[in-house]
Amino acid sequence: MKLEIQQLSKCYSNGVQALSQVSLTCPKGIYGLLGQNGAGKSTLMRTIATLQDADEGEIFLDEVNLQKFPKEARSMIGYLPQDMGVYPNMSALETLEYFAGLKGLHRVNLHEELERVNLVNEAHQRLDTYSGGMRRRFGIAVAFLGQPRLVIVDEPTAGLDPFERRRFQHLLATAAQNCILILSSHIVEDISDLASNMAILHKGKVLAEGPPSELVSKLEGKIHLTEVPFEHSEEAHREHQVLSSRPKKNSHLLRIYSKEALGGDFTMVPPDLEDFYAFRVGEESQKSDLVKS
Image (cartoon, rainbow, N blue to C red; front, side):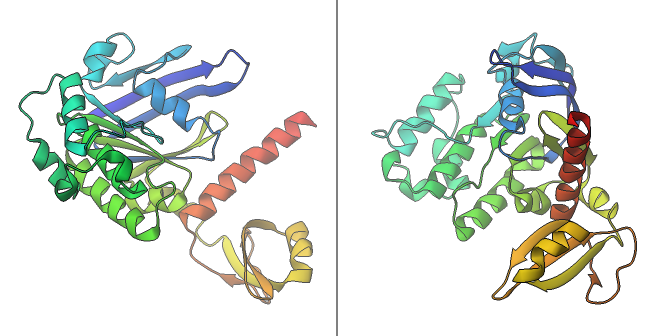
């Protein structure tokens, strides 16, 4: 089971180049797509889901060309957008039955599907009474109807409290054992906690692809931690390549990239995915600034 994206490009009518020669290979399991808002993630998700066409490139789910055979493709795909529209006056069970009918599924145990996402006790409750976390879990029940080969989940934990976020992550990890699940997020922890493979998308381009642990290992021995008073923070940013800054009561805790050992108040620490993400995006931004100048 494999999703192949080959040289995919998309430019909107307003001139925005949303995707530029994107090529990815997504095996079975959770594949993370990490990028800022506006990086092109949602455009890529909608294109894979056959909701819009690309200008160039091809997408294959195993042997099926998703763009040439969209009707066949849609029977194999489940999609949970960031903002899932619901019919507020319908119950969860009624809505799930409606979506099952749209997919041509007539022998699905809907109570079992709701039990899987821990909503069976709220099956007859109207969807407009559901919390944000409950709606996201209901969206997973819809996306996994019919046991699709490919499930696309866009910004799944946005707006969830920490408890619901962990609950939702567990649900995704369990549900993704027998399919390809593409998890799109701007939240680094979503990707580092769940994804076996990932890519970083920035301004429509792929900056890096691979297992998160392999990407992070490229910064081994190059991340240094230091704490500086507020009044010295700007100076530290001028003198060093600061990847992140966390405010404390009277100081800033800085994570700094340096190939060379830094003495004094600097402590070498293990890198994490947030370090690698900030490093690659910063590196790309520097290249863009050089081109513009």
